[in-house]
Image (cartoon, rainbow over all chains, first blue to last red; front, top):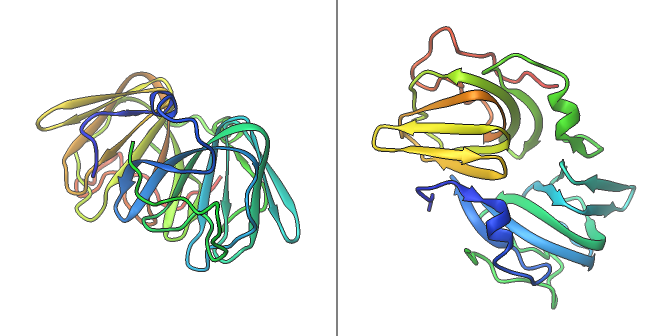
Length: 122
Length: 122
């Protein structure tokens, strides 16, 4: 599923405006690279089988965990360890590059109305 | 191996100056996130068992392949497919975030003097 050209993150970010709905922009073996725009707070959830990478491209993301909250600013990344409950939050709109295995559901083991479809390529 | 705090890319880039010697800054399951500074041209090589992700943080990277050359500018990413021979090149210093499975050798199946040690965390 690799593209033959470089993928421009800003260009891809210009193609959508919805929140909490990751868009796939590339694949690395069995992993997917996704862009997502977020604002407000997400549901508490965990991914029992995988770590999850957040790289903040603009804005500021808070990742609440049960024992602490990590602030991830533009140009910073954080990996939520497998199985750790977390709740992403952003006061202002924040743009993020995610990386995780193909098929990971955004709401993890929690589900609910914020569950986004998978494998939406842009 | 996950850190408890966010990892600041600019701060980590300030910790080294050598070229073509990737430094590990994070792990996602069995994958590693690495920063590397490059200038000049690398050896032709391939990774028979894995794709390789290049995300350009500053500067401009050319990835020559046998049938084409892809230019990857700041804010762009490119995935070299598994088994495809490639030669990274940069006229000016270029800073890159790499992602690939732990244990991948930078010179792939070519080896030689540009082979860097693995698992150098900063």
